[in-house]
Image (tube, rainbow, N blue to C red; front, side, top):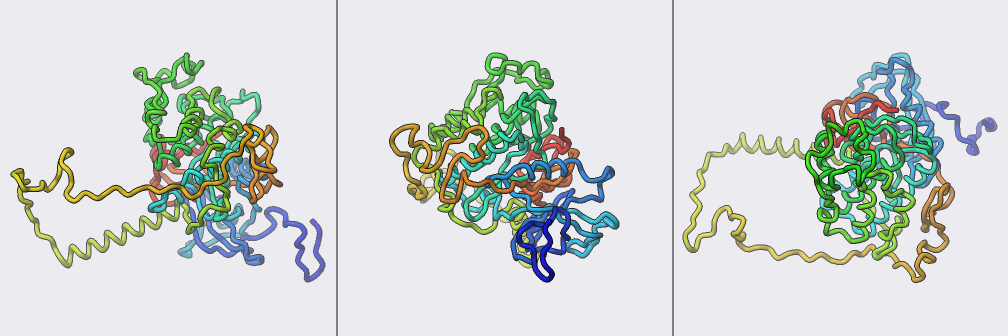
Length: 507
């Protein structure tokens, strides 16, 4: 590294990773917490840049630096794309540190290691959980196209993400979506014959081949998760909220039909097929369950939620689906509205605080104004009486008129004539193998790639919920969140925990 003159800053070259101290940053707010570390929003003192600091705890390690963190850092240094999170550098602390309460972390001799990421304002789960939030169709198309573009870039660089879910999709106030949390990511060979663990991907987004015990798989496992995210955005809630592996598979069978050798050759040879095969034949009901979806959305969803992974659509082909080229077309990221910071960890923490305040207020009111038991009169059934509790065939008094739903105002310019020739916006080439971006807007899609990154910490073992985008693993109680939050999650894993969190050990 070049040396600056005395008294001058060297602004031409970045410092070597690990050469700087955590003291170069000022911690502003904790935005994630879990068994294996915390995540903070911080400001670099010298430049004023806001970043995310993810602490890798070392006090529980018996064999040196965690191998999962090494793997993650290696992958993040390899990936450089606008829709993949950027890992900026690694910094260290020289010795023991104190937490928010002034308690030492007990790491007396080794100090701590932090991963420094670019800061993002939201994650998709935290944003969608905002009260009254409902995404427009052009907004959903914009987010989905960015997700598929980033994932296609990972796949052509032979990287499986293996934990696609809403809390691992970060969004900034410029409307840019980035893939994050590469703690379970793994490089794969193109021949797909290497044996990998099937104990990955959050339960609600885990594909059937992993649930049935497959250890030979490829990019199709990520595409199933994308299909679940896609349907969740259009449906307004998760579509496959299983509480165990068995229940998760049953929900998949009920939605996608029961697999057999005719629609999924080789399924009967999977490890767990004898014990987890469907108990009765079930037909595919995707179009029936989501009959309110647009026909092009249904067509794309059907291809993403295909049982046979060899027939599941790829990220590249999904980007060229008719859904993205029919009105309303995806809006530009820069046209999206801005929101207050909305991370899953933070929104759950706020809700928990509100519940506690309401409970305390209710207790005080009960103490100051004790209520006496009042017996309700019997329901009157004679003429002229309105029942106190209307039945299913009895209308409520003074019904409110339905609220009309207005048109969408995020429509972008319609697709021009000429079929495939005008399929891509001006100055943009379609995706081909080896290219990192699939479209271009005034925000530079398809331009020079950016440094990649992800927010995942190490953490092995089935110890409960995983964190979110910055990769903090939760403890053995409901502790999910976009940054490994402490509030309850949205789905348990096989061994308990929140939001169907995946097992930590992996290959």
